[in-house]
Length: 168
Ligand SMILES: Nc1nc2c(c(=O)[nH]1)N[C@H]1C(S)=C(S)[C@@H](COP(=O)(O)O)O[C@H]1N2
Ligand SMILES: [Mo]
Image (cartoon, rainbow, N blue to C red; front, top):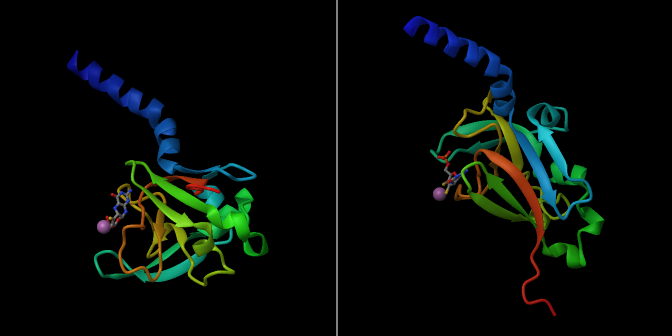
């Protein structure tokens, strides 16, 4: 009785393995005020133009991250960039959301290559290894930022939102 219960547990795990495997791969959704909403898997992101940054981790150690610049992802979603990122488009922000409900905001301007050389990355590798479950599969890395509050771990979604408080 006990043995056959164990057997069924093994069979169940084996049957579920492809499903669990897919869930673990993770997907980034790009939503909100975009021309083209996106769902990007780790495989999709690896096929995009990637970038590398060497930065100080929250614990003070130096690490090299590989990922895709947030502006590349936003470009693919069709948000205003460079010459088009002016006037009312400067009210646009990206609200980045994580699996644990944590959320942080970046303005599109601070991510745009015509405003800043700083490459804010959606990272998927640290020192050559894929990110662990507590951090990955995707983490935002913000070079040169003194505090690490916006280094959001376990990113699931980037929602483009317009901040238009008390508009005339
Ligand atoms: N998903 C998620 N990301 C997060 C947080 C969080 O609570 N949830 N905390 C942030 C804060 S306030 C800091 S200081 C850093 C800490 O990074 P660490 O957890 O890798 O040490 O993660 C940031 N990223
Ligand atoms: Mo923090």
